[in-house]
View 1 (tube, rainbow, N blue to C red):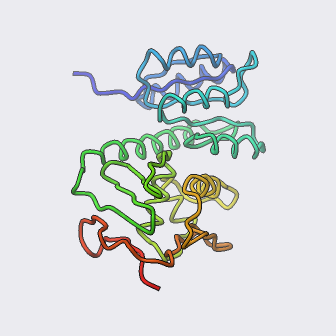
View 2: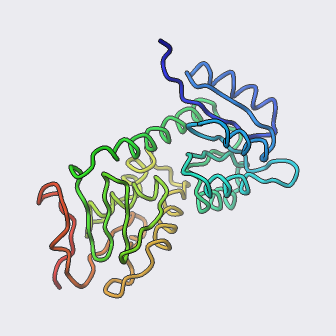
Length: 259
């Protein structure tokens, strides 16, 4: 019986680069398909169950990588790693804000691409496997936010909140450590599955998106507070009301306290 191979779609108009990636990624055990235009890539995604998409920002015929990413996100949570021009910080930030799971600037070492791909697939796979944990999983509730790792569900102010896998991981880490500073190094290692780089703004962008999606709470206008030069802290709300939070054990419970 053949071992299961994760299938990746590369969408890039650089044919020489695509040939290189096909050769290299196949030696790493991946099954690879290639599309040189955005609309062709979307057609292939519609008809094939891919595990991940490697997507270039710059695509021909007026169909940018951002447009492709936007349409992918409108359809599914399929992991996307974007390729950007080196030094184009705006492209990286826009890609992350639109829902990309990670980015890699060109030119890059193929080994780093493989490492990024494996990290994304691990995060994504862990997220989907955790669905089977069901009610055995701990639930974190802080103020009007409830996070259930078992179902990967987040409720804020009694409304469901759609988060990317990275955003969910970051929120879970912050709620698990509510009231305590979590460094960027810890967030990068746990949420992105890679070491933190001083010039990498991925964590900051994901936290910014998370703040926007959660909005403000009357009792705690600033849910996630930046600690300059260190990291972030999820702040305890000023009011209580979390006594009914479902948790696995009392020591794992994340709840607000009375002021």
